[in-house]
Image (cartoon, rainbow, N blue to C red; front, side, top):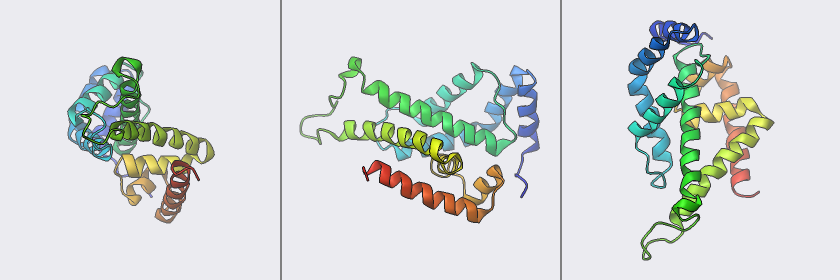
Length: 189
């Protein structure tokens, strides 16, 4: 069940881990289109409660990646999984920032004639999903990884199976469990 690897990205990831900062920039340039697609997928799920654009989300991700120690990634899919996790954290941080006192706290920034609590409910929902995923991570780390890769990363069941070195049937079971568990958590049940 070998992971489909892009030899160029895999070598660049190894070079980056060995201390070659230029390799990180090359990875970002090589993967920019995929990162932008991933960012658009994340933001599409968030509807209109976040003002970030895909390019801004990718730029934020790149700034975070370049300001830290090199990532320990095995291949392209593993890199995309970690990038997806980081994008989710940026979106959650943005939702929390929007709810902060400087932005009027929980007061909506909508005209009175529109749905008054729409923006707040969506911002709160992002944070709720993030916190529920953190709880799932503690309960069942593998299922949480499946959710992140499938829902946030846009990977297929087969790609998730390759990254986690599992069978597709196991990924399907984990996906079904995680979806049911998260639904119960988010609906208060």
